[in-house]
Length: 507
Image (cartoon, rainbow, N blue to C red; front, side):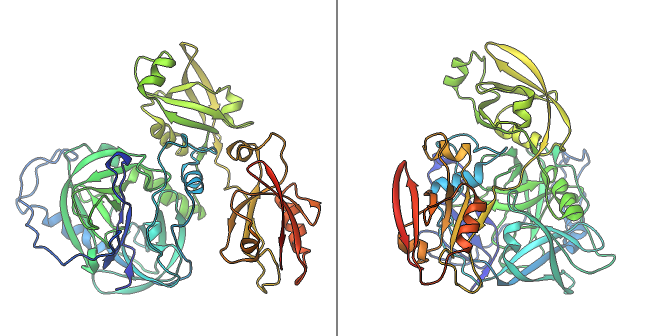
């Protein structure tokens, strides 16, 4: 019963007001914690000779059988065992929003914008799981979802011909929910890359995967929408929406066009029940292919960086800024010394064009910038003070995540075990409502029932002193934490929402 890693189920639009669920192969959880009663008989896909819009050719008289026959040998079953990480949905909303929406180095949008979906259940520390993957090179590189393999200590890949391989993780990209794994093989069957940018709404597509452990399942549908973003599924989104049946176990499987080419990686479904309801999402190959290539080459993903916080334009904002429509991305702030700052972008600018492409909304700008190479020069058109201006920016490399130090000690001798902090920069000072010039480090996480937790230290607290010694940086924190001795209390001076407070941590 504990078979996981199926399709993610999300309630993407806040207006619908549905709960958020994650669905794992073989079981699903909603508020009721009920399970589906069973399988319902599915109707066979109708044969068609209608022309396929993406290929311009008529379908064969045998329907989609040749396509399915060419693709299914390369869509594999991925079994995950001995998960090494506990995954829970207990982050507070502020941290969820900050983690999910740091688009270009600053929190994206505002506090009323989209938030990361909450996981309503705890996956547990050692769950087994099952998902799908697509072999995209004959020497064994497999594209799948990050949520299929995250935390795994052991991966087994089973091909449709029953061959089994142990797999290793080449690289993962949680921000797009993609991952690449590798098996040792030669002359393996593959699915060739397709161009998802050529897809049109109404094109036929096939979803191939292993729903509920039913290997090599093929379902038929059409492209319902392209370029779906701001769903809250991942931080970086460029989804193909389809009504091809996607169910638990399909995650990481192939979405192919009528040429049998890979155009998407099946990732998520929208559902009230935990099962297929006609709305599924696949990461487009326009996003997936460069991420795959980067992971294979370097083991990581390098994204372009502008250094602005942006938001969409609504009717009232358009009127305020003298715009004739609601297109563009409004700059809420510009990070100091960022590429945007050096190029002359200002708070209140509306970015309406990037590299001769019109900008419909903030998600469109995000996709273009993050796919740009560091050092690339880009032309940006902005609307400022009632007229259009053109700026040239040199795209930077998106910086690593904010440095976090965790005062963990393998021997358990540190009284600060389970306490994680990060630098208190200008952004954090503003977000926490602190006075300019406040010094210290921000508490990013406190492990339940740790000494720090029992002492009353909470996420968002600013640690200013330890044993009357000033803490001005993560480096100071690490130095002072390492000097604490067992059985001796440590005196903390913290700033909590602008008020100073002393706390004693009993080590």
